[in-house]
Length: 200
Image (cartoon, helix red, strand yellow):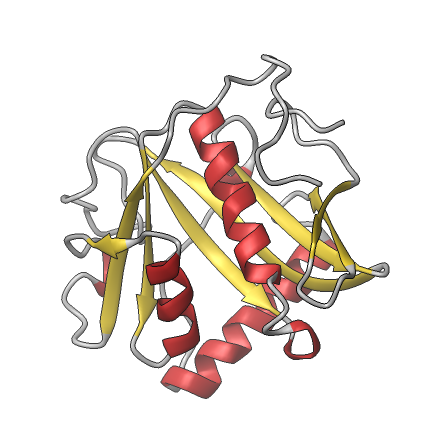
C-alpha cells in the first residue's frame, strides 16, 4: 500500500501497454538522476540549440521542499521529473527574481521520458506523482516552464489542466517560452496514511 507521506520505493502505475512503471525518489545528484538530467539537457540542445540556462541547486529537491523521481520499467530507467518549492522572493534562475510566483508555489522541473518509452503514459504518471507530493507538502499550485519546441509536452500539460501563467525566471521574456500552472487539490499531509490517488 502506498501512502501520500514519505515517498516509498516500489510505487507503481500501469502504462498504456500494460507494463508497470515503478517510481522512486533519488537525490538530484545521484548518478542515475544526473544521467537523466543530462538526457534532458541533450533534448534541449536538439530542440532549442542549447542547454537550459536555469540554475538548479540539488538541495532544492530534498524532501520536504522538493523531490526528484525516476520512473523505471522492467528495471530500466524510463523517465524522470522533479519539483521544488518556490518561496516568496525566490529566484527560479538562480540569479533573476521570480517576481510573478506567489509564495507557496511549487515548480515542476526536468520532466523527461527516454525515447523507447514515449507515448506510454510515463510522463503522465511522473507529473501526477509530482503534483501529489507538492500538494501533500502544502503547496496550492504548481508552475512550470516549457517551450514551443515541445508540442507533445504542451499537449500533455493542457490535458492535465495546466493553463498559462505569467513568465518568471531566466526565460520570463523569451518569445518561445511557455509558462503554465495548475491549482492543486489539497492532499493529505505527510504521514496521514491516505491511499495515493494514482498508485495501483
